[in-house]
Image (cartoon, rainbow, N blue to C red; front, side):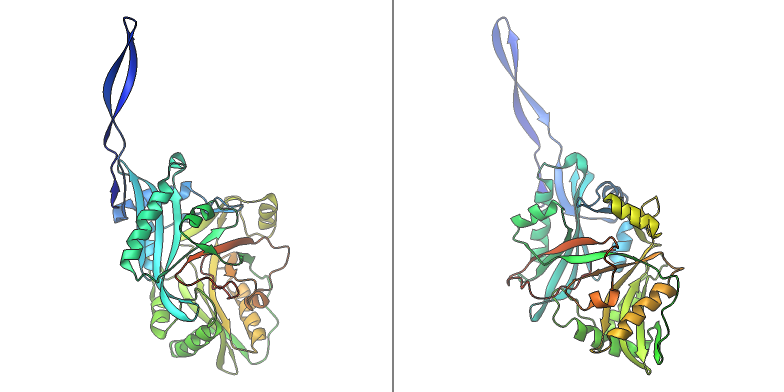
Length: 376
């Protein structure tokens, strides 16, 4: 289905003439609604639409772009696709998809991370989200194999979960995400431990460590030396946002993580949250009155067996060392994971809960841990 053309439709109006009802046939031109792939000229309209459509969960975020929207998404994704709904040429709906190979069960399969399914508030409750989803899913299914895994993160309370039921998506166990404040003092030094940016000759050890740590996680994107090099080389608008950090014990790499500073490209704005989230966020210096977060994104945290202490030291050191680069670190993780023991998030720190919605040819195994890519 490449377009939905409603064209001209007849309608009847009634008119009383000399005591009789005279029927007049009239024609009214209906707006033309069509679905298509994004083009570069859509970028300003997409930015306006995203700003107008915050997440509808209990906590609502939207994105503010400091650079061209499509350049950001294309530059930071392995393979980016986007579709829009246009009414008389005006973009009123969108959905993005990023194609990557993911772990699912005991195999690697093509996967599509779905995000930004949005319809302008003036055009909701008209079936546009459903029809846009139909069009986009047909497109992506034609593009990939039939066993492709489709998945996306949905905030708890988001009405999009109802739409997902129509397409056979199943929800994972809850995941945890949020922003963690920087430290005002460094952690106590531990003899023989060193934290620093990774060096080129350490990429093989990082690949081995990351893939081993997430070996049993659904939705993990396996890494290689080439993909990590590509990650480090990503550049948008003269900004290289990505870095790999490692922790070494006795000169040997035993833990690490990836960090992305996208604050010069896009920022998250909190537009809706319970009162206690805003109160604690302001008190901790995480959330200014503008609601815009200066968050650095932390992902791919890993450590070798028996090296939990090193992973904690790495995390706490970066919380201090990066305090001038951002005012908080954005994390997302499965609360059943060993990462919970690394982050040690205090119970009083406001966090959000979400779920991944997954559609795959094989049943979702709820006992498997989830690798989380979405979040601050």
